[in-house]
Length: 490
Ligand code: FAD
Image (tube, rainbow, N blue to C red; front, side, top):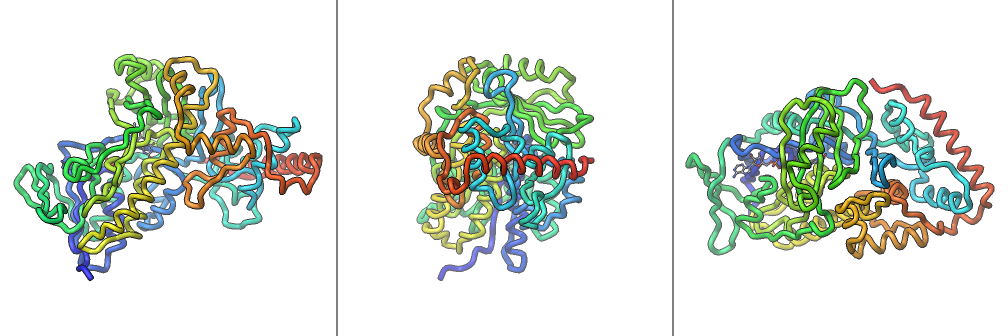
């Protein structure tokens, strides 16, 4: 049996680097394994990324964050979902809520009740069946309760926060558990001639840092995973044509919505994210369809207020690293791939990478079997999230700009095409047990994007159409009353 890993080296001190450092220092706390994190202030971090999804609770619990303290430290606000505006033409809007539709314990079957009623010309809009949407629209907030009989168990929430402050908060935690931060720019990566594994990193100031396991959190450049290990990149720009973003903060909103706003625009979409101390704004766009200067002007015009800092341009290539783990290098964060932030999934992808690494944590020989399993799971997850994002671009009506026309007409991945076909024909979603987005999310977005199911699960036919309609009306009423009991958010 090979020896244990005794030296872990993390390259990068962005959100990914410090999340990894916090999680590994917790997991390895009682061993003698040293964790070093190298980062370069000169290079800096990507500096955006403010919206999360509810899986963040898993990570925060794992590393032992106190919710109230972390929220205060990071300027965090509650997030109950995303409002998509204009994807079905100017003036259109729909809500992708966290939590589930309908009553407690009915998440998988509820869409079928609604589809059935819609197909006989009854039932109110989807939003009336989501308690989370109702409270979000009314500026109210409550946490889900664990009681499976309570409507409040159907709620879900995540956070908007300042990702740089989140990284700083985690840094304090990681350093208190023994992680050593090393300031410096890595300029050379030494590898073992026989195995190809990385042995030592050399910095611009002449330091040499050796390790057994290297975690590449160096961001889009993929310093170790790509430049040293040549993992390869699967480019998805033919499906996700946006390749750049302008980001600019404005002052904090007086009345902060409890959700992210995502508004379709000429060559992409704009985000608006309410934090306590500022508002995060940006325009994700395709440089194939709009020049960066014009995109910048478009963002500033849409904001219609003074920005607190000059807009910053960030360029990226959508896709994933073919192998996120090669030899003794594991890529976590933007170094593993980039999926644009339409569904706020990057921080989730960081934490699920960390979760996989903890489950498959290697010995010093870095077994290729573990790497294979890691890569298989990582590819599947990226592809599932990719499909969900493509759905938003592909199924749009009422937008005629060249980017949107391109997306409407582009061939889509078979996995997504068959999911849409299956839903349309039978109302089924064909989810795998480990899919990130569950029935409620797919149902909300498919419905919001105008995909109508023609049939429902026939198990429901034990009751009549009239009884189904009566039950739905009662459910709407119960949700309306429950929403009024939820206190207004602070
Ligand atoms: P980075 O932040 O780029 O950090 C890289 C680190 O590596 C830095 O510390 C850098 O100094 C270091 N480094 C690089 N090279 C070297 C070297 N040679 N030597 C030493 N150190 C080095 N995610 C979400 O979950 N929600 C969102 O709403 C969201 N919005 C986004 C919007 C945009 C426009 C973009 C581009 C991304 C968004 N993201 C979002 C993604 C999110 O910003 C990132 O996932 C997250 O910040 C992680 O970045 P990272 O740590 O992998 O990389």
